[in-house]
Image 1 (spheres, one colour):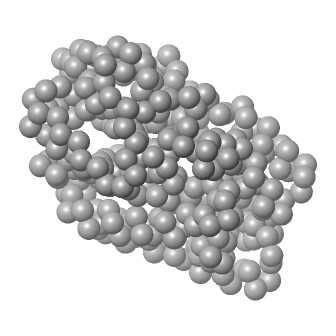
Image 2 (cartoon, rainbow, N blue to C red):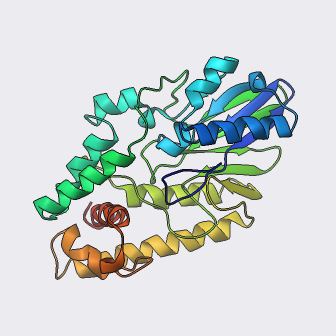
Length: 294
């Protein structure tokens, strides 16, 4: 489905057919283009919207939770997401939603005040969701979801967010990896807004967990499905461990994420990155520093 206004350009949501209806994995943006693409695809493969009985959300980013509530209104489907990513829970435990956490993290990077203000203002412009989605179930650990002849396991895999989960259709040998383990490139680490946050450490443990699931095909929310999941997990783990090692060395000379970030490897040199990409890189660097110092 198209993601208008996002550098990711598109997201893939998945439907699992069961003897008692459909399971939807993730729910795109709350945007007409996503909704129209989703409903048109449903019709094209011969299903009605009211056949969706369960919505499993990998995490709480706006391109994943978008129209989940709209599906529930139309079909009565239950919505499930890990408790750590539940918006109401985050407001209680983390002191606020995405923008509150982002501002708190930016203020810990050592960036100049004017840079923080500009990055925060740009983020406000892309914070598309109201963070008011109410869940029907918010498990705190592993979960099992049975619909007719299909059982799907929810496996906590924090790192990209604190409540990220992957979902495993064990009979088919498929794992839906959300944004934790795409086919190519690194994983964006969660915002480290609280003192004990260690997204990098979380991610490394999650990659080991995914590698051990025994699934044969990984279906990420972006890019494309792939095989040899343990090899991809090992590749990604090596990449992020190398980032941590580089940051540890740089911290011998520099003190803050703002000082470290230009010396790390990005898709382009630091000075050539756009403002949104610089914000992601800066927060990612702060997460890496937490991984080194925690």
